[in-house]
Image (cartoon, rainbow, N blue to C red; front, side, top):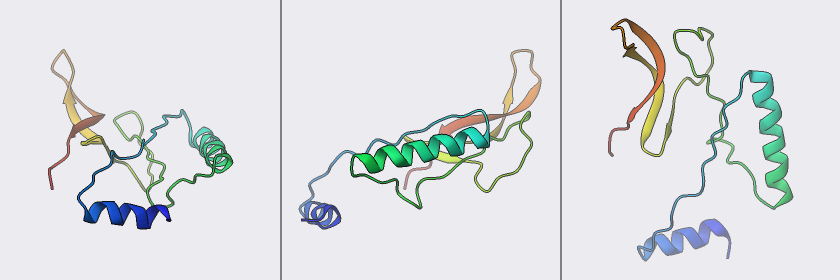
Length: 106
């Protein structure tokens, strides 16, 4: 039985499975990110798996120091949405950091 058919079969019977492991890899540059993504894709193929094409994305952790632009600047992981947010330093000054916050419940 194919995996997607098996999944729907179990869902109809209210059998719940834990979500798959969702790796997050933090890199220093876009070039490094692309090298790691290619290696990860290759390794997954070696064991008969593949990355989900629409769920796999490169996210730019934009904050006060990183001012570049990118298609994706936020992501949700384990119920927390990471994105640029205002924050306060210990001395009271404000800055923009890449911060998590609980995602709204659906």
